[in-house]
Image (tube, rainbow, N blue to C red):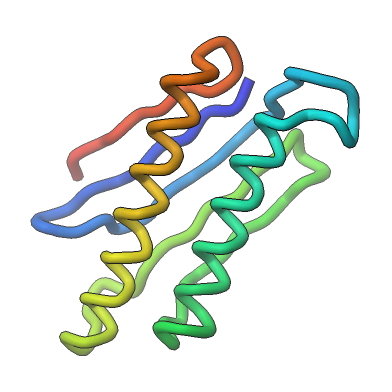
Length: 112
């Protein structure tokens, strides 16, 4: 099962963590895993390449599937807006996947 956790501060998403594997199909045929992976990779790439935000990324696929991304605590206003837009879109997409595939994805939101 995939566990996705988003950490929220005051008016912002500070970080997210994704652990586990969906196991909804055979390797290479797992559409739930593919959906979560595409959303996560696109978001990290957007944060780094489009918004130019120096996010901290911890990716350990060998450890049972693990991705943790943390934003710097303070960003310039335009970078903050871009980053939060990307993160909110990612969070919304992951919520939809978790609702449609509840047997394979659990979603949590934590207020820091």
